[in-house]
Length: 79
Image (spheres, rainbow, N blue to C red):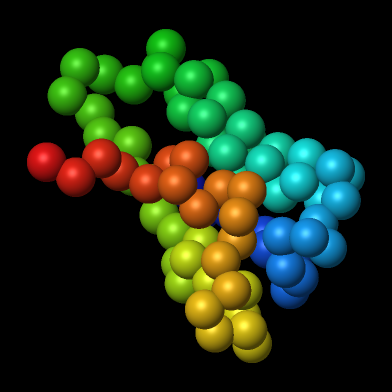
């Protein structure tokens, strides 16, 4: 099981390229490559659980303000 995430209490117009890169590196890139590195040591039928929190859907203290950079990136596909 893994869980990592950050957000910035700001609107989209107030995010810098550095903010976006930091959010994406922590919320998407890190979990992706961690899972990739784990694949060789997992046995057939193993599961990897990636969790998130309310922070993935809204910036804490700012109801309705989405975390624009990573909101949909790791969200499971609905079936």
